[in-house]
Image 1: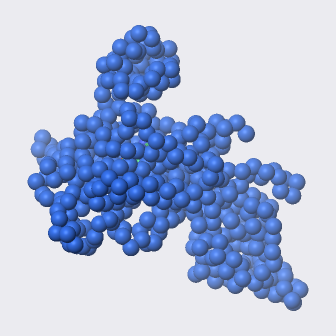
Image 2 (image 1 turned 180 degrees about the horizontal axis):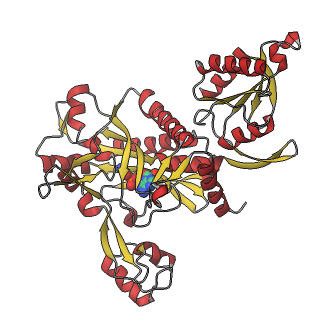
Image 3 (image 1 turned 180 degrees about the vertical axis):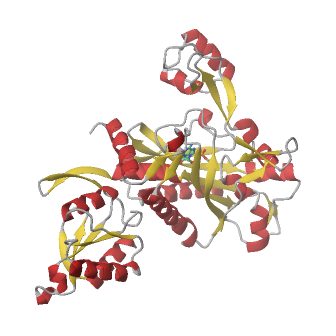
Length: 463
Ligand code: GAP
């Protein structure tokens, strides 16, 4: 299968099966926005729960937080985003389509390292660079990615605010609140999941680059000491990679890549990405940044509030350094789907299935009566469904079409188990009474088990 074809197949599957829909679709869409359908919402939640379990519940040193999306404009001045959160923008003079100047130059083989916007303009003129549609381009200009909004009831007196460009700052402005309420000792972390907004010049590649997305982030505060900073940085790099592999993504499709000097965000002393081997090439999946004391120092400066940590053992006041590990939920969902997509033949028939890890699969099990026109089978299947519903999250009842079609449907959405209620369940063969068939998605193999055994089998796969 051609790799680009794979992306198209995933986009089509997501729409057809209720994972992801284009945003504002019946009004012609809104670029860079997507809505999660029933299965997408489930998959999205499962990824976030897996993250929260790993980064918060399994740790003694991490606190959860849920900060506001709307923040004072001063926060973004302090964090450096009003100044430094920018991309170089050019526009096609005929179609008015917008492009990233650095991307066009890179595609033309230019090394954009350390080029200022002015120098990019010079290079573009020198190369007589045209837009992908063959038209002249405007001079590159700096474009800020923060999304502006205004608050207040009276026109003319409205206050300019920004939708958060990263969820990070909600954590750092609450650093003192966490110190005062939870009394943590260094090192400790604050974890958060939430929406971020970016006025991306060129959103694209489905969920890969969008304008509204969710991030999962840990801000880990450490002693301001070079050795400790290095140790913690390496630790969280490995920890993040282990988590990403735990999504079920094949190890060979993930790698680390260090940011070159010119790529680093304004706050980062050191930056590494976890990259995924996608149909668009190796692409950023996750970022691990050494932010030093940038955020706390700047918020202290701009707010006038001390954000120092008082070491209870030495009575020393320090401004901690921050190691950040940050990733997008939508990107994790997209890469997981791309990696899980399989086409094969089972029982002489072609099929598509998603080899999703049971812990994140949107539907854990589907219950079928063998025939839908036999009331005794349907009644028993409903009974089994009700009893399993209290033990297994997210199960489906399906009596549409023949059994083969139901398997195909469940395979295509990645349901790891299907349970069929047949005449033996009802006692046609007395020794098999109250047993069901449990079918495994990837192999298509079936086993005969009691309902209790089937439930245990599913639960152990989920844990
Ligand atoms: N607080 C650090 C931060 O925001 P980032 O590298 O800009 O760092 C972190 O973003 C992660 O958020 C990325 O690795 C990616 O997974 C996700 N992300 C960033 N921009 C995105 C976008 N436009 N669409 C989807 N996900 C995005």
